[in-house]
Length: 143
Image 1 (cartoon, one colour):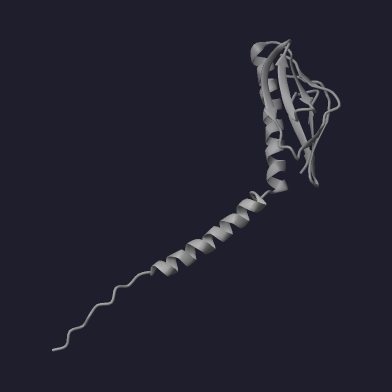
Image 2 (cartoon, one colour):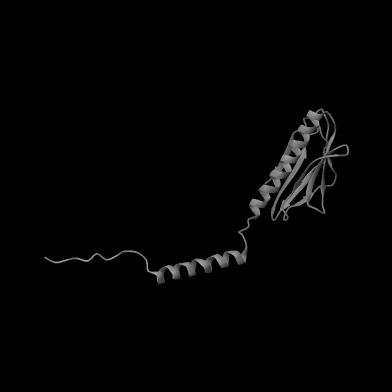
């Protein structure tokens, strides 16, 4: 009768140290370069922030029964929604976003708005945003 000795299966301490060292090198490379960045994601985020702010302003004008204005603060790269002198909301756009807003957009209590067109650009992607003077609907043209 022969005895068989079972060998333990698993990783040695040396193998585990090597794997952790390699993982640490990859982590250091990722942290050094910073998070992955996509202009498409920044564009979609900026467009959604802009559209949601304009839709909220139109809804606020209709529910409060007073004129609501949205203007762009270039210095802080943010949209400011206000009614008379009351601040209603502030929305910051991504730092890569360029908003061409020649005049504030004003929403009336009946749902109509000023017919000003704004342009948004992030990298090579652009979109034009305007409000229909007849229906007050917010329209986008472009990407």
